[in-house]
Length: 194
Image 1: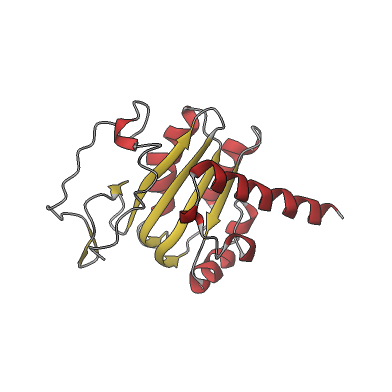
Image 2: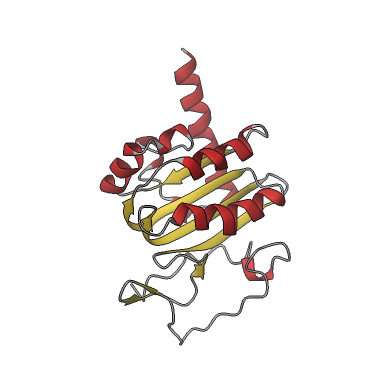
């Protein structure tokens, strides 16, 4: 796992450690000191900790005018033992919501497992953003991760599933990826209204 780096090709557009309103502002990273682990496996030092011992992330892009954030996740999302959704909500989402962000894109290509608990924090997150036209999209989940998420009804509070899997988000600029996801959301809404 130590060689899985956060996606870096958008650094020309956004760097969270240089964003004065980011919770990671001023953070310095080592290329050589591996300190964070997921269980017994060291992870690349560019990943950011939110307090969880199994789930790490990197804020890849934020657009405060359009009110969206793109976040890449790594590790095991474990709500059952570690209450990772609480860390994600309290240490990242709440901060971003206070800065006007109401659309969250979570890239889960590197989330290897998901262990569910209840849906309280997902519901709270949804309640915090829905009045402003906000949403949460969970992108590129592994099949077994998606099954677990749907088993705890996360789809009631976020957009997940086949329409949001197998998206090659790394080939475009952040705005292009956002527009693609928004287009999928609009198409889903049209299909539901018939």
